[in-house]
Length: 258
Figure (cartoon, rainbow, N blue to C red):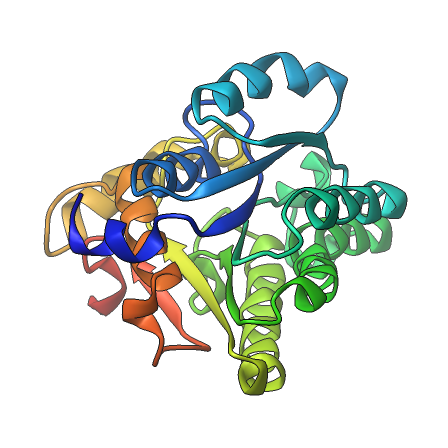
């Protein structure tokens, strides 16, 4: 096992956001498990469970639990199960986002209030909630990771209201890093380049984002979910103990281009 694996082995963490084997959350979970981490995995609902549970079992997940972040009792139940099973938590990977399709495909200035509220509730506020529940279980420190996108900082055609939502998520991450730093809890937002996930397929003209990423990135390639997982593993490891509050781009260098 490599150096990062030696540091991660035995760490216990919650991974939220696996929908299928193309999910960023699954890429992270796979790499973390490969390095010896012990996992708890959630699924959205009964419909999703039939896809997620076999993946979780393949990862030797010790807990496989339902979590719809719009149902507060479910989140409390997840962390109670973690408390009873492990009594501690070393990391959380938050990789969920949602916006009603009509609001996602419309102009920012036309976004409905319910659509904006739901996008913020699921995509941003849920990270705060996870941190709130995780904090008491991280008495020895830990790492909280979430997923953002380049459209948080620059206007990306067709990303629309999710740009402001991800900007809020990145800001939340920085404030959390400040508040939780004294307890040894580190917080980062990972910002992968465009990935062919089910969630991304909802973005209009997504293929053009893919083509542009390949054409403009210094590495001239798309990143994949394993690339994101390897960065997540490093940030969770004690090798990254001096880092917190960063938005870490995992995009082949696309973000440096004018």
